[in-house]
Image (cartoon, rainbow, N blue to C red; front, side, top):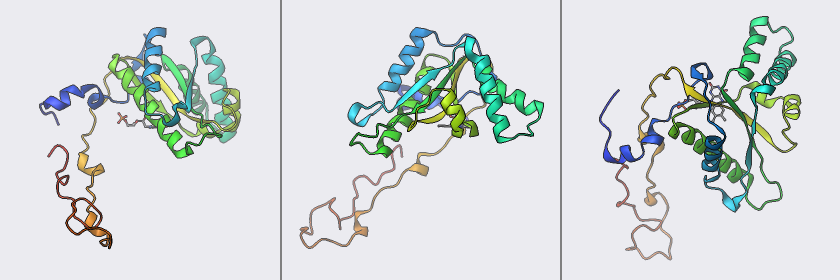
Length: 226
Ligand SMILES: Cc1cc2nc3c(=O)[nH]c(=O)nc-3n(C[C@H](O)[C@H](O)[C@H](O)COP(=O)(O)O)c2cc1C
């Protein structure tokens, strides 16, 4: 449904209009080296407890795509020895179709005091920044995983180390055909407002202090944007 953007939405337009674009809808040219560098810098600006950057990307350059296609085909055959020629062709295309193809690897630092779950969140935030930066530069992008990301042999062939995780493959390129419009999701679906009165009042709490456990929080009850 089309509607006029508010002032706040116009400022956030890049984030609000990002859409994933399937590799089938992408064509050359891909982001050049400088643009890819800027996109990765955006990834590195994601919130990152301890500055660990617990992720990395592997670029699959055009000259190595046929070798990657062979790896994808072999992975498909390990999973499904009776795979049809059409299935195998589709597997190969996942390696060859995207103008730019990156493997996105989550690389948690095991000896760090930062809990693994925070490192995963940092990696996810970096992935989001990478996709938004590509969109900001006018390119289409998508991350796709699939069962091949869980195949240990493929991970080894691609240089994913023990303790690392192949989270997905990022395709990027010029948008040949626009993707369908995103369905609008209401912020209410991810929003709630804690009502402190659910807790029994603590004996140490003076009864008149607002915003402490035992007191209803009234000031922030307004839904953002409402
Ligand atoms: C790590 C990761 C892996 C994903 N893998 C797949 C996938 O294998 N197949 C798929 O259809 N969508 C996958 N998605 C979702 C798409 O990338 C995309 O976000 C989704 O289609 C929604 O489109 P939108 O980003 O335009 O909202 C994955 C998303 C993430 C974050």
